[in-house]
Length: 153
Ligand code: ZN
Figure 1 (cartoon, rainbow, N blue to C red):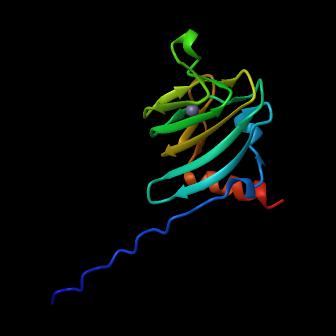
Figure 2 (figure 1 turned 30 degrees about the horizontal axis):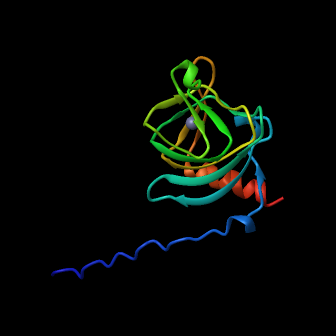
């Protein structure tokens, strides 16, 4: 018997009015200096998520490896990625776009002035210690759980 064709319902789109979303504290275990963020989208079928970050002068993200690629748009300020231009990485200056490849290792992502950026992540982030051992493997689901915990207080 021939089966009926399976109709695939497309995933609904999403729109976020960003000013209507409150800033949440980014987990201090994974950052320093008071970074706040807004989770804009999660895409479980892609293992992806998109967020907007506000990073005060002197703040940084803890060391991590991007398991999948990511794209960012620095809308404000200055961001040192992979050590910054002086150490073989990039120093993004707003307005600046960047693509980070699979397995990009970000030992310290540092903000020398008040900065903001948008980023889409494809796949998890592997936060590591000084020896490169995993401290936390952060998937889209962990990101969503962290967002829900931060915004349900
Ligand atoms: Zn990174």
